[in-house]
Image (tube, rainbow, N blue to C red; front, side, top):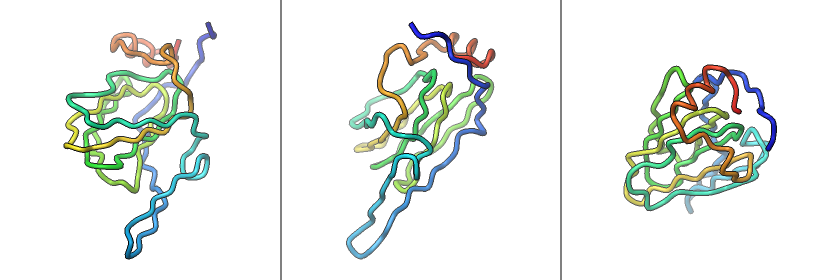
Length: 146
């Protein structure tokens, strides 16, 4: 088991929109993403959610940074830092939302055929998630991800 990593207390101010380079022409729009250039980290994992019924998320990542992009349809994204929360309507295919570590995330209100693409800077590890709300609150108040 790895030792606990210390993190500064996360703030909703760290969440930001990232405009993705795109080129429209008579054939449509081409949107490109380059790791480390358009996205503020090296991409280690890519996954997407589709055909969603109900909610997704309901967890925080101890150390993972992510960018969520609504590549089809739209949905709501609620983020919480342990003190405050905010809700984003995800609908613009040419921008993604950057989420730092220790951000509690809940995705909901998916339109039919909505697709959410996620770019992450870590590979999947079950132990890297915080799935208990009370544990998240305790860790967020102490500024650490054990």
